[in-house]
Length: 474
Image: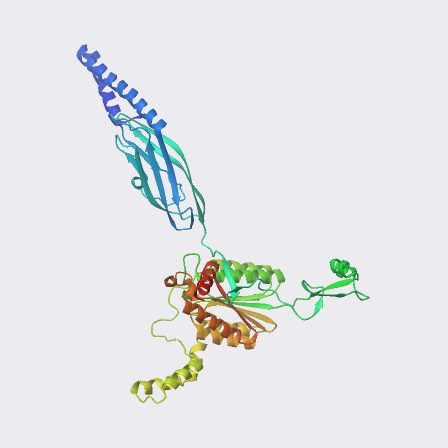
């Protein structure tokens, strides 16, 4: 319990009167000093009673909603306090915020009891800039006696927790046509058999086979020695092209298109590392290639690409500035041109030459960043290679023509597409039906190209919602 300035002022006056009485040898000032001293003693006794009563009767609790958030998100923290019996003194109950959070000013996280009140609560919004398990485990109580001579600060225990996680994709779906692909990406094999890593088939034992090749389980079952053969793995160059343009910034913080694309790319690099495959990487922004590395198979190469993947951010400006049109594929142009047959209007006459200009289409597609990066990656390969393109489906003409080039120049091509419809706020994260159908048609169109496999990369929850909606529609 600490005295206030008011107590100090009265105590000073009492001391002055006592000294004054001694100096002047007058009893009257001494009587006044004794009266003030008695008043202060009575006030102190009353303050002790009030503070003991508050300590005994006060209870407080803290709740956090939601109890799990991501970094830089906010949560509502509620402080509730109550007294079993009212006291004739002001009491303030303050939520003690941990140092790792951004809390509002004290007044907005304090429950103030006026004399006679027995209950109160306050809710404040708190930001969590640091990941971890944040504990709200203390409540501070400030008590002042009714005369204003003494204050006391008590600490009550609270038990509220909030889990703050770093923003990251949760439940990644990588599949084809909604079917989850169970195999890990990056495995590769040849038609040759031998002591490799991938099981191939069993056959009967022949003279010259080593004992280490015997499959003892099959031998015991068939009552004859059997050999387990393995496919020998070949040395592939993994050519990775990752789109980090502004379109890849769609989605909530930490769960954008680029976040999901990054997880796929990291998995591919891990697979290449485990196989000792050489890797090359290109990161493509709105204006062109922003970073290029390899090919290399050194241990530092894998770490370099991993670090770069973890640090990349989508470019800021729009990929297609105002005034820049999307190229139209010749097939689509011909369909639109046929619609103008028999139309002699000035509009049709002006539009018809543009729909028949194939060279303009080729020129405009070849200038696109993704197309240029894929063509560059293919031209560097002088061995069996696996070209992987990770992008979205917003620039379908550009993506399709880039994959056409890759299918002709690469041994194997994989395309990982993040469907725009699943990251569109207007669709609520589940994608609109028309958007899902259009995406799947585009994915199948890519797969019809030779040596091309196309996958969708999306939040698993969004895929489940889309599947449920399709089932309900049927």
